[in-house]
Length: 236
Image (cartoon, rainbow, N blue to C red):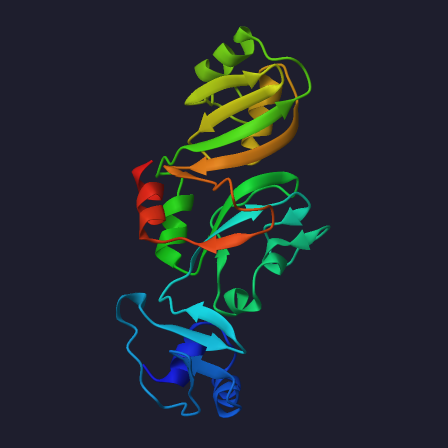
């Protein structure tokens, strides 16, 4: 693939803008400045890395990202009341069409997936695919065995005709609940906790499938998902 096309597919602007970056000697491949927009480089197996203005970028046919979402951000390109999660990412990702894989409420923190791979997004947002998700909730009132049993047995949410049950509900402290669910209904975890007789004061997603939020990833930070991460995600 020629260098202009590489920059274009990776979200560095229009083809004219990408060609200008190259002509201005702002792009390096293998540590060597390349000013030829038509120079070809192999992109097989995503092995290519390049630099723009000294920042190293790996070539990726598709972007698979993990963000440690902080509170106060909306999972939308057109947020209504808070900042967008996309403001936490380099602009190249929005340019190439990266979108949230499901959403977290503005006050919910933790693991958020993003990708520009439509099949991947559909796979992990389709209600037909039962992907377990682990949330950790801080509750207003102390937890007891009756609440945990109710959550495991199923609660009837407002507007629903069928009870929704947690795969697991575990108390990690007097006011800390780890809840595993398969669905992704609107405000589901908060509504389930309310239906069990308590109230959710804070909510954090720590796992999707077999993929856990890295403890070393700071709130607001992001990282690429590698093949091992994607394998863990699918194995859950």
